[in-house]
Image (cartoon, rainbow, N blue to C red; front, side, top):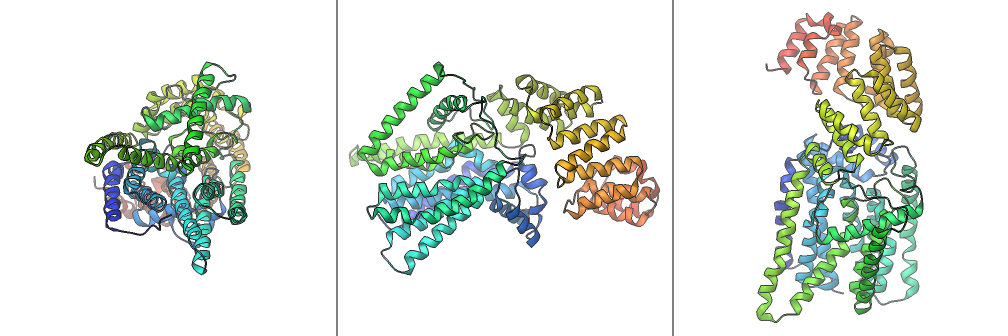
Length: 612
């Protein structure tokens, strides 16, 4: 096994990979956040990322984000916020850079194992620009996958150094570094739990040595993996976690349904067409024709893999790696999303090694005089993949482009219709929002998020009875659905039934005391009731938890104005404007601010923050 030394050709290849990444992914710098799909909770509404304070760092390591334990992702968002504020281009630049670094680390790994420039360049380029990789790069909230891969590869590098060294402190420092990077990978995303098994297979396929040592030096990896796996399972068990019952209701239904999904993954690797942010795989309750055909195809793939392994154990390792990497998302432990492009990010390392090996096989089958022709032929699929990824990156420009594409690709996905409806609703397009919500409701009347969105829409448009019926159905289906109770409270409040609204909000607060959105709604309710002291206390509770929201500051300005506290009202109003409150009509007409509107300092604030 060759030591991964550095030479001029590697530098050229690294520059080529950087250039390729810039060309394919550079347009993402103009993309927005996916505010309707996790970027809101991970970034926009996540107060933890606003500074590198000890309090926020502690929060990153002691809390879950949407049911996931991803402290290093949160730390990376802290760094982005420190550098770029809330400029999405900066967050995208960081993701592109990490993905590119991963491609360079894969090049380095391949060079250590094979020392063949064509294999290294073709394999790492395949990993870099394959269209199924676009989701993990373009979706900022999947930064965790990119980080997990980077630390996973660094841990692998450390393990290679440990195995190659003969003795001395350097060998054990390499082992310690490998174990540390493995821990960092797990703190990024639990997918890295596969490393102990991967290293065991790696030893068996690439090294010859004492079998006992191969097992003993994996024990610390298993111990670290066990700790993080336990923490991850706690996150899965939370209301926001991804743990769900078996799809189709039984293990067998999930098993039958996943066979066509695995075949579809194979097809996406070869012909990455009709990629989508959301898929709606059919649920199969019995081994019908589709399931049987999928089983036959997978059996053929298994036979080919076995033959490949027998011919070249080192080449067969990469098939085993891909299988190991897809195993955590194979639904043996059911998770919410059955199929996603991002699930192929880790398996793509094995596929990329096979692609690079295929390029070498083709090169070696022709004479030296024809190799230039072979290189040109090899270039064509990479050009095609680059163009496809460049086009796919444009789909991720904003929430409307992404989810319009998703419902076009997967019209039977109630989840895609539900998110698209939320995008329309947020933009004020209630007509299209209603159409999308109702389409999602027809596809799946039990989708809780869609029921809540539809109920909220009915409430917003004044169709209070219809909203009430939908929200009560939601809460009958999911009695502990916190945001459902908050939505029911909104429905009651809009009716003027403040007592029932208070009961709904307090029940939501009892279910999830840390939900500051519910505390803010209680503040709104007490403000409308004229209970100014109680309203102020609720809003200040949100402020004390780090919720520096423009609306909270504005509502505090209203409370203080209604209480006759002009100085305090103007102070909060200035904070609201500093935080981005820009509703000039509301400032000009809101009767709650009437007591301060005649103050010269109010007019000065308006002149300072509004140019027209």
